[in-house]
Image (tube, rainbow, N blue to C red):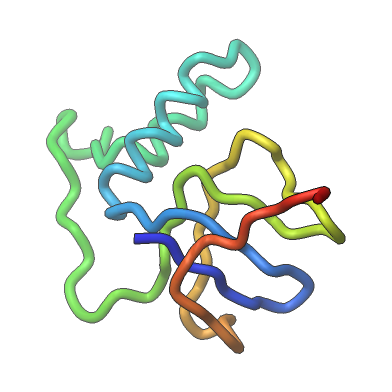
Length: 106
């Protein structure tokens, strides 16, 4: 589902993703970087202190939206062009609309 949200200092538009898929994709991107590889374990759901077993998911209501292939709207274009991965706290959202905002020079 595509969604556009307004948060302090930004408008973000893109596709919502399940949290588990979002974390997996972020971990993959970090693992592919020589400089950032060590941070990938923070997103894998594996607790190194538990012998490599998956950490328990948090209980309760969702607190964040996870965007995949999303852009921060800046003037008449989105950053980045190809879309990025963003996590937005529900408490920071001041407005929203269903749908992805597109761009046209025409």
